[in-house]
Length: 197
Image (cartoon, rainbow, N blue to C red):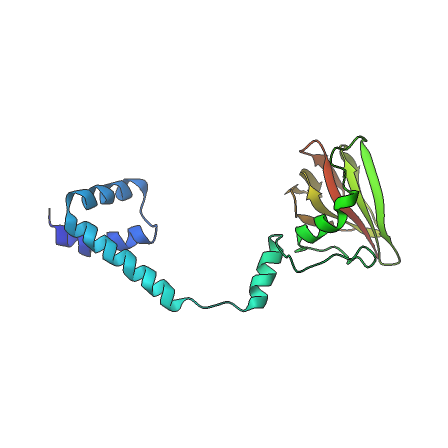
């Protein structure tokens, strides 16, 4: 076998980029064990790619990090004020809500449905709910119904679309659209919001 031709074929670079299938990857690993020059070249390519990544890396704007962390529920800088609640929407960070509502969320629910009104004004009605009951098909024409899941998971059918929702997920249901909610876990705790039109 022409080892230099194998090295020059680009397969080592493809390996470093994760582009090889299992068979080619296994063969390459075998080649590194049989031929020290293949192993040495692979190591050199890995080091060069690592150096290139380091040279082209940039420090992101701190605001980008904050938005990203918030989108996955780790926005520690946000504080939810129960006396001035925001309208819930997509991209809300989970942890501040859990922290603010911790004293209202039952550790072991003893009832089938628990509801605590958090906000009720001309813009929106927000309720903290804990339920073990499915919601049969319904539709609304005078308010947008939204769910922000705090604990547990459920499945929603909205019109022709199916959604699986878990902790930190948000969904808003369009007006005049049939929808239902089926629990996947024994209980779901969520912010249920009616945003008035």
